[in-house]
Length: 287
Image (cartoon, rainbow, N blue to C red; front, side):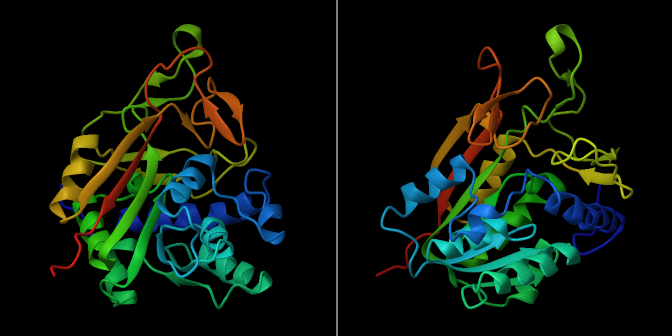
């Protein structure tokens, strides 16, 4: 199936859905901005630990590109840690809120936000090899039809020696949906590998169980792990680490139990991986 990366029904539907969700998310407890307003951050434990491993001396002087940044809470968290951040998101309401929050927190000198489809990023921000870190976390590539082009965009922006930090829901878990079957476990619903998108009409929202989304139709793609790793390598990046995890920072399925610090996992055993974490580096310049 051929998909126009720069426009079309898939992009319009996904953008409308995420634009509507901004208000729902801002009104929810899930996106509590109190730590940001206190000068701290709201990075989830996985991303927080990952950044600390990559930058044990802190983020002062580090230039970060945050792709698919939603309304910028994580971007501003990185700015509070000392980074200079550019956030990109395709939802107008999300970018407007990110800019407003940056002004409120007096972080506009360290964080700026661009409204763009990720596939247009090179045109909206024509600065190749300009970032020390490309930061991408949670619920990102599932909305994108071409992960190889995504990886090429990441590579294009990284300085020699710069790194991609990527944390995402594991595609082997994303083949399931909801609660059902034996013991309330989620039921097998989607293919693990499928070139065509899953077009889903679902008015619910993970941040507010009572919300009803009007723009409920979304287009989603499953990218198997070997496809993701191959795309990253194919873009010329060297994979430094790949780790699977058994928790995620949202209740992906009703059966998942709270683990503390905003994380959820299987209640009894490591049934299957729920997440993965990937660090890749752009090659250093030749001497």
